[in-house]
Length: 87
Image 1 (cartoon, helix red, strand yellow):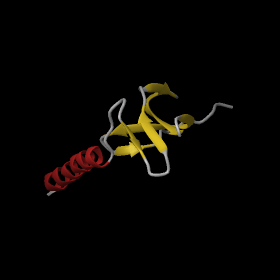
Image 2: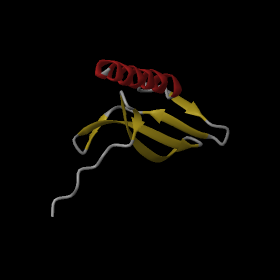
Image 3: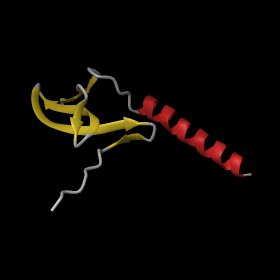
């Protein structure tokens, strides 16, 4: 019984990863442009608080506007977790 539950859980995690790859393609250099003129481009990975993140660059009419830092792993796409600040 326990093995069946673990097997089902593993399959659901793997299926989630496969779906995330299809839903949100993630390759450095990939870009897309929305109807409003905003372009999003996946930049080179970098270190962010001890985690390797991918940078999602936003630009409007060719001018950079912002960056998002994303972790893309077997759990899907998420924002990086920040370590609490030492006091």
